[in-house]
Image (tube, rainbow, N blue to C red):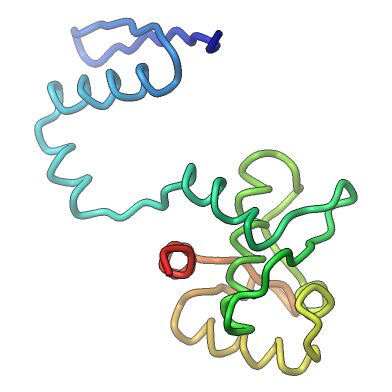
Length: 158
């Protein structure tokens, strides 16, 4: 039996309640938003958002977290750049799910995971930063950007 959720929404003088499984309630909420604000649909077509469900289903084919929080590469993608993006995407998802305290990953940790020299990893991270796929948050620590998540979706579609 699927768990049910209940959601009550108020917008100006409109009120509506939804009940069902997550997908049903989400669909009903989106339809409600389209009704109350006609620009929502137009804006949603202009703004790309990552498909977190697809990422959560596909990333474990390539890499996973250990119970201690370390990364394990399960299947190596064709390039080190792709491996780095996948690890950073896993860190992002793990943080969103509350499994990591933050989404930042040190270059040494990436180097150890993909079995490449740290200098090589830092050079790739520099290139990924230049194209806005990765953001350097402080010395030696990086996080994936929305554009980087888009690149990960492309990797998984190959």
